[in-house]
Length: 277
Ligand code: ATR
Image (cartoon, rainbow, N blue to C red; front, side):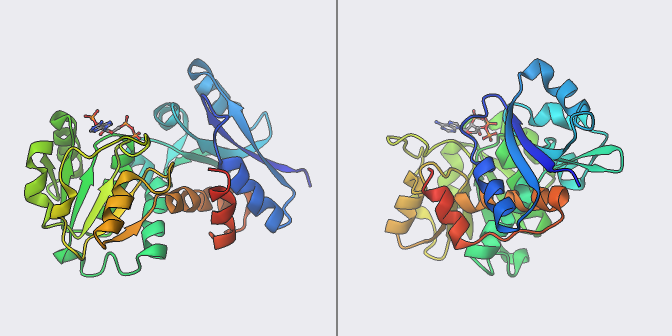
């Protein structure tokens, strides 16, 4: 049997940690496989995805800036990709190239692992999602799938929050940053999907001290692992889940599609990636 080869395509792609992650599982499971980086210019992404069979690639991950182009290029979409409007994983079903979105799975699986019970009694739960970009769409999809009854969507550019609320339905209530503090003391879970926290001097545009003492706080930013949000929430004694688990868990469904084994997200794997951050 020939070696199965999967990939991550992006532009740039050299900083991606996906090869380390999939390489670990390939080795762990003794698979005759490979997972490499493909730096693809935006004008070539569609033709690259159309040529996978010819190149004997079994599928792969799609990252910035190609997630929307991949949505257009595949033959078939899964439910999550359809609703989120972006594809981060592709695989073959017969001759058809399927595009899926596993970011939503990554988000929920991370909370399921590190904050078990976070979605209990969802009819009584309120979430705050900060940010209304691409990543926020996967978070909204996850929360709605888990039937969280009220989601405040706060964004600097309110028009983007309004647009997403319209698309995702009445569960999602858009708020301006100036209105954020009125929602904070209602939230059972606070999620940052903005890029705030990536730079050391980043600050929040509103006061997080209003959060309930029982609130769970999670950040999609994982470089650094301890973002300004995670640090402040820990200081306030709140339960926190960092964003690295989302990266690890979003990789699971792809690996299973390409190589036929469902891999595990273990502490050893997490440590391997932490050491590389
Ligand atoms: P991603 O795909 O990671 O979600 P994106 O689509 O560029 O990236 O979205 C970035 C999000 O971070 C947006 O919600 C953006 O707010 P705007 O819609 O107003 O641009 C938010 N964001 C980035 N920097 C921010 C800052 N300094 N303050 C507030 N929001 C910020």
